[in-house]
Length: 402
Image (cartoon, rainbow, N blue to C red; front, side, top):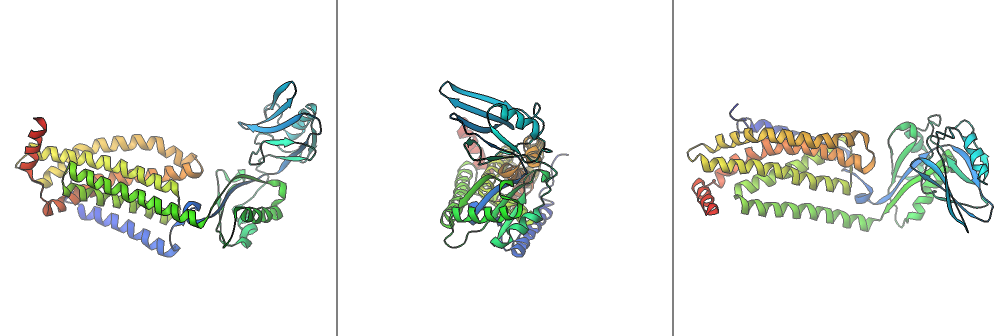
């Protein structure tokens, strides 16, 4: 194969891209915009885990006793005049709450077993750890598949709070959920924490709800963050336009910028279709893809310019298609190498890392497609408006050598 027919099938490429972007616009109308995360939408976000209480512990001595969780293992730090002593209680040695309770009592704690049937393999940590023990009893929770909590139960418990979004995090059997709640006029973080805590406590019991993460973003800050993110993208695109115009020609620059807009629009369409959250992580993914796609486009354009210098009488369209063919293997290898590192995160990671990996995976695919099929086809058109001056290219080559 001497060349890739990107010019011949340019209308197919353009139609496929426009159709996908149009589908994204339709979904934007149906869902009334993006699924804005707390960064851009303002509100309260809380990650919680519903897990049964296995033990209640307390300490009434003169020393300082602190209970913590390290790498999934319960650890007791005892501080006194002689120093600090740490005692670990691994699940492999204390597999159930009864054996764990006996070990804690041997260290001087008062223990009540709430559920002797629970396995200690998955102790639940959260904002309540580390626990400084005193006269009052502190609960220790353990994740278990026997505590079946569905997303519908969460939504039912929180439906009285207004516009609430609930998502499952990780394995559904672990009972971990992400809750996002829109702010009301005059709401503070304390107000929203109290409302969510009260609703969940009434539905599942106060001690069985473990808060693992909470964030609050006010309307003013979220709007400033959105404006700053848009500025960052626009500044990046303008600087790219200036660089390529100086480094190459106007035809190359305009083709590259339109291809970059194509990549961004395709990524946004994916988010609209699958209702992926738009947050600051999304902006990071967009800027990453702009750089990745641009690098690939510049490699192809540089090959085009090189072939133009070498083949003075050749047709520009033939040179474009041949240059794409010469760069296609490189594009495939670099894209696959990056995907091998990113795709596992898209499947096995959670939270913002998973979202970033999904966006980046799609962006790499779209970027590879646009740099090989969209940008070169656009160069075909812009070459007619701003012709690539072959003689001038050769003169510049000589001047650089001199």
